Image 1 (tube, rainbow, N blue to C red):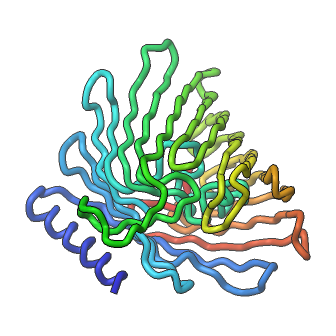
Image 2 (cartoon, rainbow, N blue to C red; image 1 turned 30 degrees about the horizontal axis):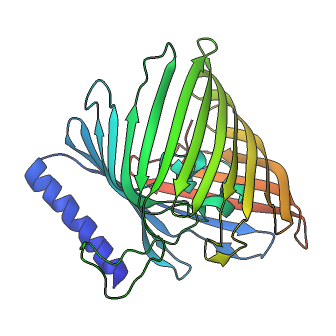
Length: 341
């Protein structure tokens, strides 16, 4: 029933947008198939629908909906309206259910990863499917000599929380469904520096506070793109987070802290081939538990950017068989492509 309601809502959105706004909406469908030497079974994230369209020249609506095959049912990953160039001080305002402007990987969608899936350090912090929440996000450009923006996010939920919304009314609920009150606040200061015509360096500073959670971290990205389909990139993120007594449905000591870090280096050789290395590490301070992994990954797009074959060979501590390989295929119809350059 939940899946049916979601698709009815999406269908009505498409129809009314065509009738009243006379705007063309782009619709994409994506899916995948993977197999791992860990369990020797096929896996799939299911069917993902991506809808986007402009309701005004400076206002865009986007929706990401996934119907998982593994019994999880349908899930809305994001659905929001994005206003751009509102004033000389505010260049962007986003309203709805979205992935907050916090870090790099959590803002992206998994089907675009050449490295196939988010590192464990990231999924332990944000969750397997990433962190989305109701809220409002603003972006402002500061009067500096280099490219930059400052983002403020006022959010219903924080990292590690299971979204629990009792409805769309503001009256007090008969049964209290959320024992943690207040909003969560996330801030990001992003700066970009041009090294030369083909190279740039970006630094992001991230801070989150509220709803019994705290996190502070940074991300770095250096990219050299000599041609459209030829580039080299180094990317890393680090977070130190106070997750307190509950995180992703698991109970912890009230003073527990989680450290998360990864680094990726990848080379896009041409339109077809990508190869890279990846390493990550995570640790709990009080639980005295940690794990590290490292390996290589690659992507091959034989036809165009609508079909991508990927592999990942990892060595991960704490497993019965530390080394394993994962193979996957991702495909799409529509303008939203799985292969990115």
